Amino acid sequence: MESVQVNSSNRTARSGGLGSYQLNFFRFAALFCLFFVIAFGLGYPTLNRYDPRTLPGLVDVKSYAAMVTGAPVPGHEHMRFRVLVPWVARAFYRVANGRVHTWDPVMFGLLSSDSLFVAATALLIVVLGTRQLGNYPVSLVASLLYLVNFAIPNLRLVGLVDAGEGFLLLALLWSVAESRLWWLPLIAALGALTKESFVPFSIVFTATWWFVTRRRLQSPGRSAAWIVASWIVSLAVMTALHWKIGGALENPIHFAAGLRGNDLYLSQFASSLWDRNLWYIFVWLLPLGIPRLKNFPRTWLIPTAATSILVFVLDGYYSGAPGTVGRALFSTAGPLLALSAALLLLDTADPFKPPGAESCTPTC
Image (cartoon, rainbow, N blue to C red; front, side, top):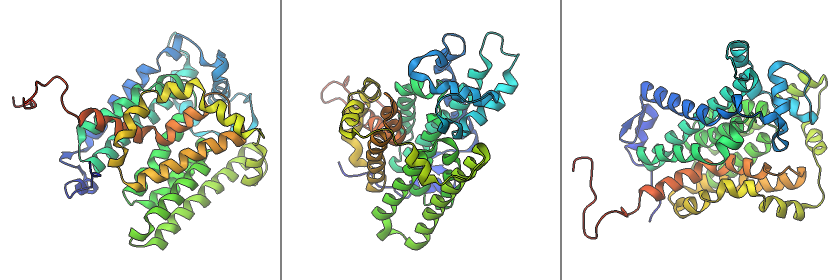
């Protein structure tokens, strides 16, 4: 099958239409609310069924919970600089504290914050998918596949900050795919506030995108300027954050060097590759997603692949804990694989249709 091309009807998305569907404000808001409620429901057990802060595999949640309440932050020092998700959670915590009966108000805040970012990611999958495929139902199914993946209830909605990073990485793809590069500095600033790994991910993603598409750009120089500006902004925000929280200016390169925790790169790679959390996430997403990736433009695929390779490089450098690679790969490649999987599931022959019979349509 030839790659799907954006047709003239798709291009109306810039003025509010998405393919043959009009994504007006009310549909946009309704979808976001739907995705938020679904995400909140998936993460509900953290409110009074179990406490993620007590589980060995989720020790980072202790740090983020402390940031919500303003308590001293336990754990590794660099955890203090992952502030965006806990900052958003703090507003919900203040509203909920003393008013939610048996629910843990701190986890309520973190779950609400994570649910906002998960819902925004699902909504952006719909927007990007409809723009590229011209098929709203496929895009909607892709967002639902994303929501029911193992990573969402078990890793995104348990008080970690990966939901924010995942949304902002997808926002990078939206910005370059829609040629709205002026959004890149804002996305970079928010990403640097979310997690330090966003900075190298965004640099590799945007640089790769520019090299792949530069010959087709109307103004390669202007595009490069926006991209470099986003890099500068992310580094400046990281430096300012360290000065504000740590009380001293710290060179981002020195900060990155201080995170090195491994010399056995091949051993770390093998350990991460066979980590069960990785395969829980991708056991169905890869087989369903890979066959139809050819339907997406190289300007999406190559930057996503390059950023995914960087996940393994950084994991080897940092010596990430079990589950780190799976969470990061789901952020870099999960939405695209979900779109491709939805296309495979909905763009195949009806298995229940008798041979020679026509497919039934809503008008049958």
